[in-house]
Length: 243
Ligand SMILES: [Ca+2]
Image 1 (tube, rainbow, N blue to C red):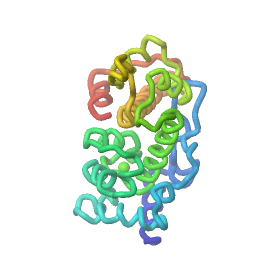
Image 2: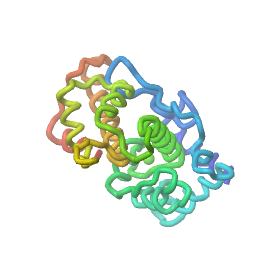
Image 3: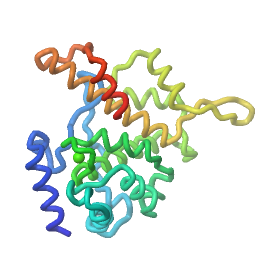
């Protein structure tokens, strides 16, 4: 298994050296909107520890099982969104850690967010980066879900968006809340609540779209971030249909 890791690492470094200078998994270190950035790997616990696995090998064996499942996966040394979906939903310790059902749609977005090659497959370093990301989001969510109901209040979400470092106008945040919340009647009054899966969907989209926007903004303005950029029709479609 260790050798498998080394091969994965080597493959990753050969294929995207641009991401390898900042850490073992080549994590992008910043996201959020311009200026104030958040360190990505705020949650220091390793994924396999958080999932109560004995060693990292336990997690990598699960991953390797899905890599070896099909010829195309093996060729790419990676997994596809349905494999990710299976891993998250069918590994008992992971399933119980997050306590939600992961949809294929969500897994596709999670993969697209971190597909750094980009080859449509999720390799081991990308998989590990995703796990750290999910852990950090879960950690943040739990901190705000004080009564452990699995929901946070919509006002809390505004705080989380700020904590991420995004500078979004209040009226846009309002629109986001409507899209990612559900109204529950509690003791006769309506409360706008956000569930963990909605929270992940929002977090992943915010991050992926901001990254896509930033990339274009920088390349069109000599490395500067101006907050404005242009997309042509095809590029726009690629962004919104693939993330
Ligand atoms: Ca990939």
